[in-house]
Amino acid sequence: LQTTDWAKVLTPPEWLPAEREALAELERTGEPVRYEKEYRHKDGTRVPIEMLVHVVRDASGQVQHYYAFITDITERKRAEAVLRLQARIRLIFSAMAHDEEMYQETLKVVLEEMLSDVGLFGYLNEDGDLVVPALTVPASRDDQAADEPAVLTRQEWNKESWAAALESGQVAVRNQPAELAPIAAAGPLRHISLPIRFQERVIGLLQVANKDTDYTDADVGRLQLVAETLAP
Image (tube, rainbow, N blue to C red; front, side, top):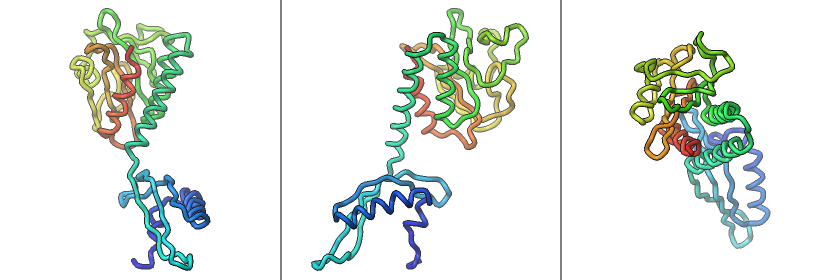
């Protein structure tokens, strides 16, 4: 263990060039350097960190040792990602002339951020029916043209988590087999069904699904911040 270079063991290889450059600057100037990288957790996951590295020299200028302060910046990175996503969504809202195109482009960037393959973005009309202009899998309904938003009346709502989320106003998370969406036949998938609220009233639904790993509380929090941007 004493001969193990823990910096290299813990650091993914793609981060090593940037780290070498930062440490070279430390050697050259003697001033502390601050930089970001990732550490590998023992379970294989990666943790974003910020390094603040100092060097201590003796009277002759020879390096005695280094020491560093390491900060877990996971939450900072998540917050930065949400801010970037919110900015992209606002740009879509301001640039798109047609509502359906706006819904589709918004869902596209949300799924990209949430590392999810499929999902939907819809709203409740005046009758309380769910209208879905953006759906990543084809609707399986014969009574509507393919180029029109799918509509599911309140009478057609089932007991799946998406309907419960709309009726209760509470987010629903499923990491076990469940029906993906109210109007899609895509098989059992893990998903988040998040009601979009405005002034304490549910006005729509945002659902993401089919992430490779289980959805976490952090995923829910990130999606809730996105939903706040989507509300009027």
